[in-house]
Image (cartoon, rainbow over all chains, first blue to last red; front, side, top):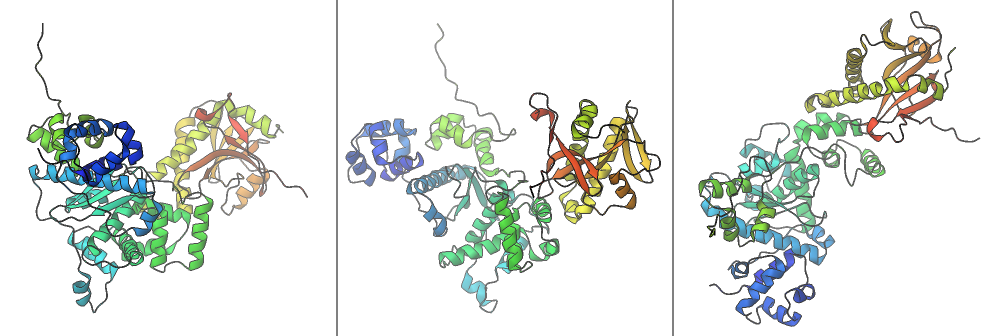
Length: 366
Length: 181
């Protein structure tokens, strides 16, 4: 058996939203001892993994995985500042656990190799365009590269998954963060999305994350500049300027609501886009935001578009089950999960999802 | 002249027709909102109201043709329904006071003032059945019945949808209260 991995203990504790003082009595163990096991100062006895697994809802094998956790990507500094340490720890842990699952499942799944999410080297790209990186131009180039027809993007999650990304629905346990993305060598780009987020906001946030993956994985800038570029890219990618411009000849709530139905982004995102394209005056912009606040639309807008659902992970699990003959317990074991936890994370979300058979056992009939 | 105060008028036809008024407006608006998003985007408020009105009219015809107690009248293009000999209603998009917002024709002004119009039963109470939309114009806030008095509104009653009706109350007085002074 592999060595006990202290990182896994910290991940399991974080994903359950527990602090060391909260977890220690559940095992039960002194907090000092738990701390030493978690920091790797002291090697725990074999039976500790059983006890910790019972307290945290993981099989003992979870703690012997050789993987190492990754931290937050280097953007979203402002968003991170709003989150509590506990919420942040939980999100990072969830992202790491999901990433490890995908790494284990993907070798058994035939991945198309000709699909990828492009990365732009700012220096090279800028050099070919006289030193200036035009975000509108980059967004248009990505649309063209993926052969996206003009008009609204029907299903952004499907588009990302068709082009080498994996969208992973997660319970972040907070509504302060809608999505997060990661580009790790040897893996498809991962987009973690908060299942509690409104669908209009989620589309925009996913496009924003795509921007980080396209623009900010080779060279970094300061946080405000990266966020601004990602916002500009998201608007340009979802609502190309030449198409959205004539819709914005009128700028009132009625028109924005109809545009929302067409472009499937929030009215707020459309207003920001109008502002960036200088199609409205600062006064119109100010009045719009005041009206949105007055109506309570800044927290939740009406006419939310139908939510998009990622399908890639369902396909992978379905492949393991229907093509490779895995049972529910087999897949749970592969992922170092308890079967009940596997059901929560990868259970049927669509009617087309196959019934996963449990392992059948022989028993003596008297 | 039949009694034209809120209580008397509403109680004269409420049990029979309120649910129809509510459904006609809601179904028609919902049908309009199901138009392709690209088409909705090209409509202005007037086109939206005109399309919704066409659906309302057709829905009313479907429901009320051959129904005793109500008959359609066409007064030089203005379509109204006479409920018995006491009440005449028209269908409109209205504001929160129950007023229709478009520029009224001379005939509409006469309708609102209660002046004699050829073909209309006299002296029936003239009402407007209207729908009030949300600020984005995408959702119905309420269906209401108002009694116009020229450009003013004498009273306005909101229909309580059947699923929200408490104690069998089918309507609520929503007439705007005037301030003192």
